[in-house]
Every structure is written in structure tokens, then in C-alpha cells.
Amino acid sequence: MENILEVSDLRMTFRHGKQTFTALDGVDFNVQKGKTVGFIGPNGAGKTTTLHILLGFLSPDSGSATILGTSASSAAARARIGYLSEHPESYKYMTAREYLDLTARLFKIPKSDRAERIAKLLEDVDLSAHADKRIATYSRGMLQRIGLAQALINDPELLILDEPTNGLDPIGRMKIRELIEDLKKRGKTIFFSSHELSEIETVCDEIIMISKGKIIRQGPVSELVGSAENLEHYFLEALKSEEAHA
Amino acid sequence: MNNILSIARTVWLEMIRRKDVYIVLILQGFFTLLLTTVDAFGSDTPSSYIMDIGLMLAFLLSIVLSITIGARQIPNEIRSGTIFSILTKPISRLEFLLGKWLGLWCGMVLANALFYCIVTAITLTKGYVFEPAVLIQVFCLHSALLGLILAICLFFTMFMSQAAGGTATGIFIVVCYLFLPRVPNLLVFAEGWRAKTMLFIYQLAPHLELFDMRMRVLHGWGTLSPLVFLGTLAYGALLTSAFLALTWLIFRKKYFTRGSSL
Image (cartoon, rainbow over all chains, first blue to last red; front, side):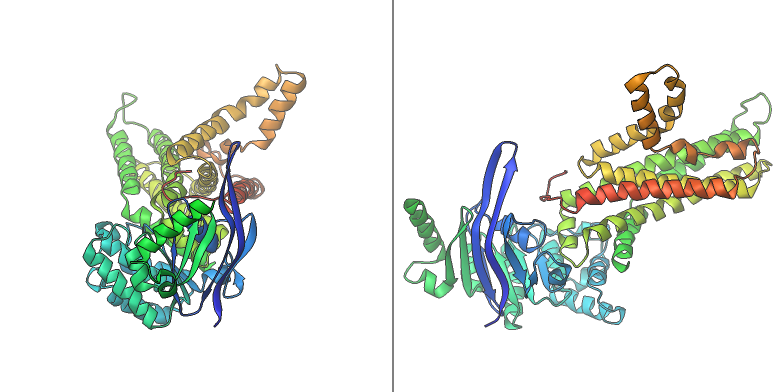
């Protein structure tokens, strides 16, 4: 199966004065087309640094990250991905429709298609009734949904979600989960970073586990979790085993 | 170009929907109108006096407004996290930066045109006579000055917070505008490396005073020759480009995390 995302030997060290901190220490993984992959790890493991390299915010010290064969930092790669950040902030002085119009323009979506696509997305994320209200008046859940809508405006081949249900109430979580399930059914590739392991277990086909800047486990959820009670137990056991090994 | 205009549109929307510009416009209209009621010289206040104060207010308020709005653009985007959504779209950091500057500049030129309209309308009702071509030149040079100030402001906010960047821009402008023209007088008393350093700074720093041609309206000195006028505009464009280029050099590789204010 075709790899949509290829990460090879990523290394990244941050320097603060005389102190150095190795955030990534030779990270390797691939994500196949059509798969939903959970990217998990404890705080400070290197998840955000990896995501920021994939999104072009950071240049690694060495190694490469390619999306559909082009460098992750290129505009060509960004044209084919959708990204929902952990705190999906939008311009508060805009309405949802205006904000989606801005993102559609940045993707150079033809004017003739723009209005229709925006209306469809607003309907999908259940925001049609609030489309012309200022984003400043939106609740946390609505902000998350408008964030997801902007990530989908270009009908991306790869969707990168960073803690998509962070801070949401159970109903908000359920709505986002339903949207992700729907995207899965449509064959989208989803790269999903979260601390909500139960959610990862429910939604993802595969997991990639990172700790101290290294990939420590990766594979199908069913295979990895295996005899463990659930993903959370497996995750904790894996971390303990790595620490003992170190 | 489409990406630059899309980002510029966000700045215009922000300027329209936030209250700063309206408040400053109302303040300027109020102060200028107030002047018409003041009997400053024991007789009817001369209309040239109203024009003088009105133009000074237009200069001062437009600069304050430029710094206020300019200084919050990039730090606010980073603090709120909106920059993460925008820069993951197929838009380069250069386009983002130019879009911000263009949006700010066009918005400020429009606001400035309104300042001038208010002053002109009020002074005309008081019977003031002036050469429109001179006022147009003053306005064009003033607009070039605002473009330069916005570029300086964006430059400072590359490595400072909104408040610090705004303050640094303000201090830089005051130093360039008030002290730089006096350097030649000081040069007479300096020797050796001191004289060379002062001369170097004098030549390198932006001469903002060149863009302030208000006196030509007030004293009826007539228009600037086309060569001087266009030369000054070109000087402004060159300095603005230089500051934008410096800003981009920092911004293109800048790593920021959400919530940080640079």
C-alpha cells in the first residue's frame, strides 16, 4: 500500500543557552494511505516537535519528512493536508463563513465552488445555524468544529489532528469522533495525536508510540494491545519496559 | 498575489470591526471642531491655525494608530494560535508578512484620507484658502511615512512582545524624527571616531522629517518639484522594503509555540 507520510531518521535538538535538549533522536515511521494512525506518548516525548516538523514550522537538524513524496515543509505538501491544532483558534472578529472563505482562498479553491463547499462543510460540522455569527461568540466545542471544517476545506489526502477532543465535554467529543469516523469511511488518511488513549483505541487502525524522542512501538492496535486489558495498560507497560531497558 | 490580498483582507476586516480607528477619527474630528470654537488670538481664530493643528493631529494620531495596530498583528497571531492554522495552508511566510503589511498600510492610508477630509472640510468652512496640489503631496508623503512606520513596527515585533515592539517603534520614530535632523549641528563639535560614528548613523537612519511637508501648506510655499517629490517617495519605498526584508529574514526561520509572545 502507498505510503502517504514518510518520516526518516528525524533528529532535533533545542538549545537554551548552554543547555541542550534532544527532542527527537532518530524518529522513523510511515503512514499508509487510508489508515487512521494514533501518535501517542507521554508529555515531552517529542510528539509536538514531530508534528511541527511535518507541518513545516520547524526544520529538523537532520532526517527527512515527506508527504506524498514532497518535502513536508513545501507549499505543495501543505496544499494536500488538513490540520486541526490542539487549540483551534480562529479570527474572532470573523464569522465562520468568512473564516472558511479565507482558508478556501488560500487553497485557491475556485470562486464558483467556494460557497457550495463552505455551506456543505458547515452542515457537516453542524454549524450552519451559526455560520454568520462572529467566532468570538462560539463555545469551545463550536471552535473545535470550525477548526475541523477549515482543516477539511481542501478535501485533504492527509488529515493531521492534534488532540482533537482536548477540553471538550462528552457530547462535543462524541460529535468529533463521529466526524472522524465519517472521514475514515471516506478513505481519508488520518494522523492523530492524542492523550485520550481510549479514543485512539476506538478510532485508530494503527498506533505509533514515542518516548524520549524515539519510536518505541508501532503497529496495528489489535496486534500491539493483544493480551493487555486495553491500550492504556499496554501504553504504561511499554513505558515501564523501556525505562527498565534504559 | 492572491494570498497576499487574502491576508490583507483579514487586516481590513479587523480594522473595520475593532473600535480603534473610529475612536481616533471621532477624537480628531472633535478636537478640530473644538479649535473652531476657541478664540485663540482675541479675534476669530485664523483658519491657518486650525489647519496647522488639524494636520498636526492627523500626523500624530495616524502614527499612534499605525503603531497600535501594527504592533499587535504578529504577536497576537502567535499568542492566540491563529498563525498555526494559516501557515499550514499553502501560503509562504513572505506572502503572510506582505499581506499583513499591505492590509495595514491600505487601511491606514484610508483612515488618513478621512483625517485629511475632516481637517480640510472644517478649515474650508472657516474660509481657508490653499493649493490642493500641495495638500495632495503632503498626503502622499505622509502615506509613505506610514508605510515605513508599519514596516518598522513589524520588524520590532519579530523579536519583541506587542507592548515592547510598539514602544520600541515609538522611541525609534521620535529619535529619528526629532534628533536625527540635529546631528549636523553636533558634528561641528565632534572629531575623530565620534564624528565618523555620528555621520554613519546620520546617513543610515531613516530621515522621517523628509516626509513631513505640512509647512508647505501652511506657509503657501507651493508644490515640491516632481524630482524631489518622487525622490522622497522612492526613498520611503526603499526604506520600507529594507525593513520588510529584514523582518522576513527573521520571520522565515522563526520557530514559535502557541501562547508565546515572541
